[in-house]
Image (cartoon, helix red, strand yellow):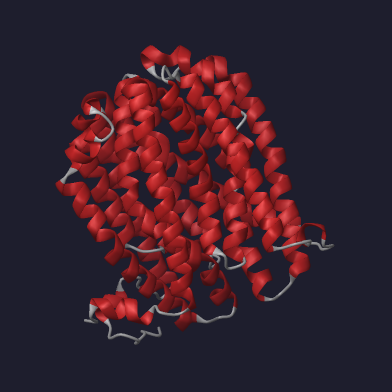
Length: 445
């Protein structure tokens, strides 16, 4: 077995610098998100926090639909165009991707606004949810565009900036606004909804300015890209994105139907803390995903395998300290959000274990999507999302938040295990194989 530190020593190259930049940005964004969650919990309490999470869930669902799976397809095609120095195609992809999201997002926002009087979630606070939903729907298009813009930065090999755009900008603006509200006092959930809309709009404007700085004049460079190919590739990935959202938010929505807003608030905070374990994987994916696409296009199988295995090892080594802290000190960590949240310690442990096993498998989902196997990933995630929904519907009425945690953790583990098996069979890559080979060796299958 290779020495663990051999993984780090072999990653001292350009890819490592990209991972380091992305990880630094992701760590900053994660820290800001953690701080905002603390401020949110202390400003609104469990009940108000639950209303906010439920509303944010609806907006996130709409933003995912608006992206139409384009986040993954523009990353794939833009990565290839950048490496081929085909800037005409890259310019066309940038215009088409953003334009499609704006049109789709506007339509989805209008549909959700028309349906808002009939959305009854949050139990005792459902009236509050209906009051703030129209305000937060104004942030639906900016929320979708932020993610798309980050994918373009990944494609041009600027993972640090991509991570800043997708995870830091919004959280920094939310923190600044929340700090002002905290100082002012007497904060209502409507104030937080308005803050989110302003912060999301500001974030996408700053992201656009950064793109024009990195790629001056590109947006008006003449060029064409087959929009039919873009949509044909994106729509299967829309299922992947949509079902990923179902995996992420089914528990919150089911809890919103069967329990009160305070339970949703405690569970939502526990979920966000558990996602700290996935932050390292997110940072690594921001670098490796475009390289997966480029290596596959170049038929560089051995390089693809080495990168997949090394990134898996690096991620696991990095995430273990976070997991240990969540498992050993869950009550203390939750206590930072207020005494009313400390009761979610068992929830946090279950969710953290699920996320750990997600990280252990490595970037298996992106490996499938960046190498032309997006339909396999789509089928996998559809079944996993159905499994999660079924588990929540069966367990939440009896076991409440713990039922949601168990169902969600199990479905995440199931999805990643299936993805791991598919990557092994279709690509001949074992993402855990690096731990069982000598440093620098590769199983060229």
